[in-house]
Image 1 (cartoon, one colour):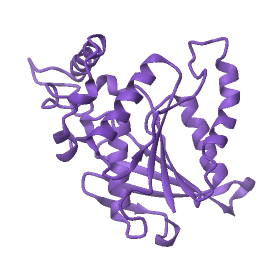
Image 2 (image 1 turned 45 degrees about the vertical axis):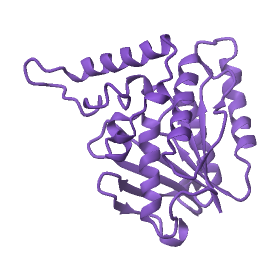
Image 3 (image 1 turned 30 degrees about the horizontal axis):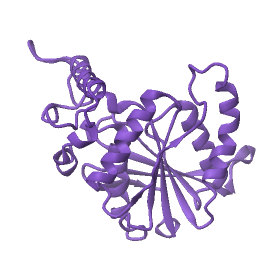
Length: 262
């Protein structure tokens, strides 16, 4: 059965530093809030990286072409945009489980973003880095990324309708009967994340699982959630299953899914 990794995209790319020229410096989440005298603090690194990315964008330089593959190969995942860091962790999580196996050519990644210029720019760069640098080997990177029409709070005349239409949009686009849906909700606009999580609950863990990596946390743990609708709790809600995987050590810290359930 094929896997589709739906990845909600935000704008963390704007303060990432996996690009040639700045990739040797610490990622924003690695930098100290209380540096030694004369050293930059976390916020100065964030300003530097944002200026770097925005300058390339203004100059129409192909930022995807400046991606430094050593950041990926050397596991400096805190220098990556949240979407790439979480896909890195999902890849290793699948490798760790014999019942899942490596991501392969039967699987695909779908990027989903809000309807504004910053989100579209970041999703486009992430798509082209994944595709051109082959970070996930034979996995298909679907083109183009999905734009959710009208999903931009600045568009006050259409935003409420966009929220109403988002549920139908997700149901229509995620209707594959022979697919398991991995909903990678690490990045992206909160309303989009909430609606995808609702879809994950509605589908149950055999059809959909939620993935979330907090790049600000110590370590590189990715949380995997699934809802068991056949095992009801008080109030009639389905119970929850969780795995917790540390990508730095490739260790499954907590296992809530039995091998046959994956």
